[in-house]
Length: 197
Image 1 (cartoon, rainbow, N blue to C red):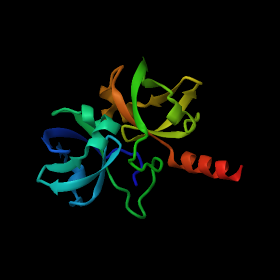
Image 2: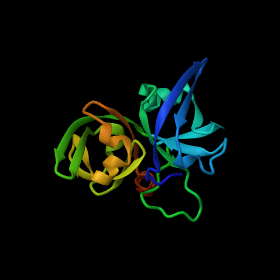
Image 3: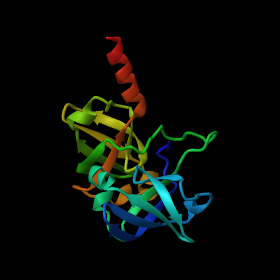
Image 4: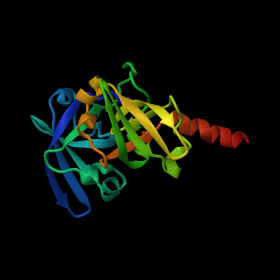
């Protein structure tokens, strides 16, 4: 479980492929502290298991399903990725509950830039539509954000300068694919209501 508060921007140092497996090495500094093989780390919002810890890198094994269901399959050497260690019992919950099990990849349809303000707009697909509500929470590449405007066809999120500086979202452009996870509480709430009917 994660919070969507990015701890560090890492750099993909190496990508190695084997049969049915891709191994990714990510350079990091801050999150190396206290992380050991077997721990969970969110990489661009995807919950991955640490398989090896180096002096400056963490290694992750990615299966075919992970590569096809997330934007990690599009990552290349040198790309910047958002990193967050798993939540510890007793930690502050600064964002919202993020599982790291993304609902899918959406592409940025439009970027609105104004002074101290950036807005990303996305098409709203049928799968995610039922869990996207104005003022609700959403995770975009692992970043906990508040949903702004929602229409029948699309939705938007606003980004403050701090978020743009402290995540890889400031480097995104129109057409960039991002991992999206809708709010787990919205999913459970909808399921409960469905059973009550």
